[in-house]
Picture (cartoon, rainbow, N blue to C red):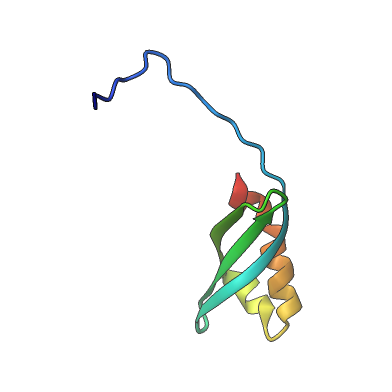
Length: 83
């Protein structure tokens, strides 16, 4: 029997993942405008989450040639990536 039946009350499964590290996999730059970082987040249970972080405006201008600035910028956006 291959029938899909709708539940009267949906069931919600909540999973808690603790992300412990990240890697910037790729960066795309549109000169004088925006940078897009592809970020891999690594969970303590071996889960990997891939997200993008955009850097634009004054943050982009402040980046200059200091890669530490870009890493710290991405780190400051991690909570926004998983919520």
